[in-house]
Image (cartoon, rainbow, N blue to C red; front, top):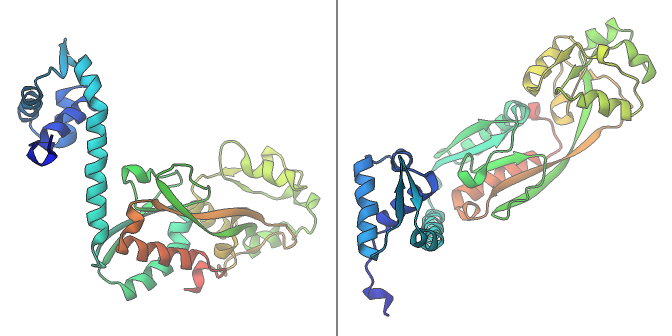
Length: 302
């Protein structure tokens, strides 16, 4: 058969695919932003075109028929092909304009990204940036963001990643707070200090005790999962906190609480979807982030 003689309506196939994935016409209609009767007619038209029954009606829902099960994977492959075509066409454009969403943790979004994005805007003013602030891993496959800054290497096969550096986390406190507790010099003397815990698991306490401290729950009167808020608490002299030294060393309101404390190394990865990374616009932003995050200077240096 000559494929050029085959006529096929992708809208009908998409209606079938989304209905199968959502489990009902109403849910599929919401996902596709179509009226339910319109979606139903598209599914019925595909059944008539193929000469098969794709769904069996059961009560208020739908169940794939044997023929529907057999054809579903083929339609999924068509959907992936349509998506790849769209991405490839998008990536061919040479226009350095449009939106790019960047996902980063609250601390990086607050302290490290602004000077990088400011420099990027000065050279590429038609690129609009959305900063998605999240301490969780954004799902790039579902386009929650175009580019993500992560501290773990991605395992998803459809993502690419570049390790931009190994960052160092150190302990910081306000000078006034250290004066108040007598500026302890040994790890044992920090038993009377107060720290700000970063999660409910006691991760910071466990980490510090593994490095020779002797801290107890009483040493952690505060807990905050938001690093930006934690940092403001440190700056106010409420206790000792841990943060990337590019942020801590650049802030004149704090100082290293334990100067000889061996910093905790953690990787910084820049991640993007393998297809999206072919876009010139995305590539420019990706490279700007890699250069900015890969430097050793603090975010406050501009």
